[in-house]
Length: 373
Image (cartoon, rainbow, N blue to C red):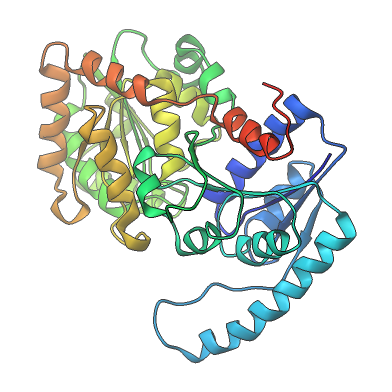
């Protein structure tokens, strides 16, 4: 069996693709596996480091308004379809899988036209434009949320699988995480992270959180600011008289390379609402306060977050309503209401799909009449 996987642009599309690839290797041992991406996407750096071959096509996303660049991109789209057909003809895949990003458009469309079994994976409650178009051509759509199903054409074959996460997200133990990060075993651990680049509104609101809980014997805070935000945030805290080194319960880092250990140690998380981040939280059963990124396409992060809130796994605060006092009060109310953390954790865990990558792999293999796990 020969497989092409296409997905790119951001880590949110690339890392799920890698996770699905690993699951397929484990359950079906494909003869050959090839990634297809773009030179300007993160996949150009990430995929080779993961040890997989990759070929590139030249395509760019369209802006959501009438511009000259959109006209130019129409010609690039035509060229990318030819490039995709050439790659597919040369590689001769038995199966083509897409995990999102505009690179999936020409690759999955070309494969569908050429009669090759195809599957796309949609992570969000509100599907992206590319996947909504592709749903009319591919054989199967695998969705991360049941709530996404009505957004696809009734004629589409849509299956609920959950969103794929790395195996080490669930394999790390709490003890391992606490030890790796130097955290106290008998305190409630609050993990704050706004993504690799950080989230300024969350970082600014955390000033009041640090002020409120500094020196607490009950709560410890692990705050990941993002690389670009770190120096500014730490400088602001010093100006406000918060000496992080002397609090005894606050750790601030620009970036975490051992996020699986941090999640294993966390009792409560403050996150944005990207689909994969939420999949990791629910796989571990972590309650959360979610502040959706307000400029996400079609506001899809808020829709993602509201699903968790509806199930009792999270509390949602809109970015334009976020203040330090509101965030600190919300944390206080959760940790001081008897049984609240446990109740939210149970609701979160019920939503988790730790085996989603295998479910997606099996949905793809079913297109070939195979099902190995």
